[in-house]
Length: 139
Image 1 (cartoon, rainbow, N blue to C red):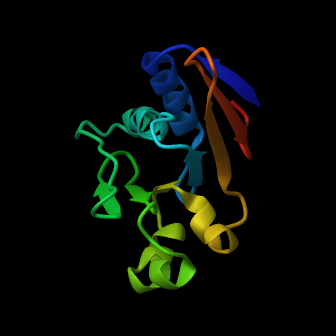
Image 2 (cartoon, one colour):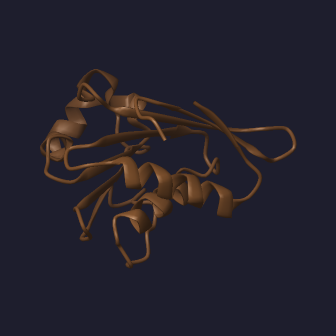
Image 3 (cartoon, helix red, strand yellow):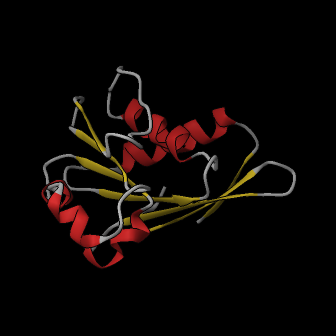
């Protein structure tokens, strides 16, 4: 599925729809360049899960856990080198947890992503709109 977002609010709303379609054990791969809107989409997913806490990209902490209707495990792998480092920080446990796992920069652990991963790719268009492609889930 392909969507176009003209604003952060539209990206947030699309994230909400994705969050509503997630269930325990869902893994969502968020891909796109810096500033594409991955964290905005994550905020929408968190809102759908009933999370009221402020969602920030865990670039320096690597992982952040939030409590809602389901736990949300939000990972930002921008600063890791690959699967070995991911395993060392215990990330694999969250891939198979009882909540929803969001992974920014998941291409760094591509071979470890579980079957059924939902792939979301955000591209910045020349007019500053976002083209968002979603695979692995029907909205």
